[in-house]
Image (cartoon, rainbow, N blue to C red):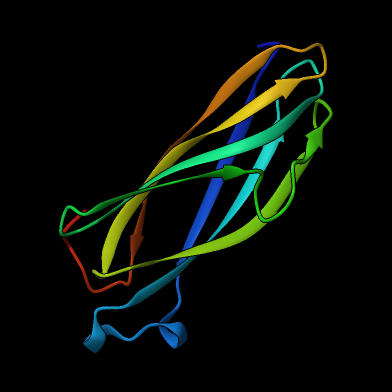
Length: 126
């Protein structure tokens, strides 16, 4: 087991009730579960997202914490949150990283592998 390690699981969801496809507005939610699979308590300090739509437009989002929290996770503990984003196309991808600091002062990044946002009608990214 790695000393400094978080596992990230993502469950994206299309939100038709908050979308207006005729106006080029597609809303998505994503639920993320972050689990400390390492050996040392560590705190999530900041996030960095790269969001791309099917037209190739890319947006970067950086900020402190996630949904107003900077969770401190002991080994085996998890933190779950739901957030969202809007795209101008019916599909896109998100990927990024979390910046974390362990209780012993070691800083490390946790990669968030790319995941697909899709309203169910697009085949662009499949």
